Image (cartoon, rainbow, N blue to C red; front, side, top):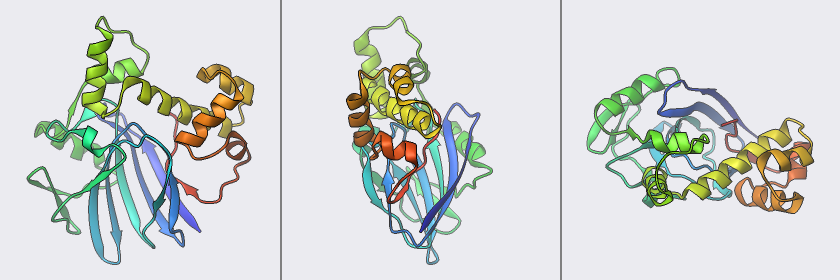
Length: 233
């Protein structure tokens, strides 16, 4: 029972990660929380589908199509779909119509399905056609910058760009970061200090909510089911 995942970072300011995977005798996975939206394609039994997956605010069990091949583009914080409110897709998804093995329809236009190797070129085309845009402020603030703007303005920009509040994005990314540190063998006490948790119970509650695992399970590598892509942000 495996969900094989290959992924790579991207130098595009619009793209966080590009990945592909294949399912084999696995029917369910733990989808961990993510403040980023994604465009995902998959093929199963000769049929190809395309879906926009919205930000996810908590870990949840997700079905995995049997013997399917997947390809996905995780968009960076601040990348938006100006003609589609991401707030409507939080903890949800939207299947795109008229998808064939070669093309799909997005916001009224037909596009050739991209590949793992040309994802950035495809996104550049979306940007040129104003289908994808970017609010650099959101990325800068999430990275620690302190803009000379009111909190209300920053909050409004976060909601518009991600569908989430600034604090929700921070909590989700903190849990993902803590999980990576635990998985890499960093002592729990150091993880608590570096990630800004109050204590071990605070860390445990955060991981259960956003990752679907306890710190002990993460550290030991023990898991009862496959988990969606986790990487250093």
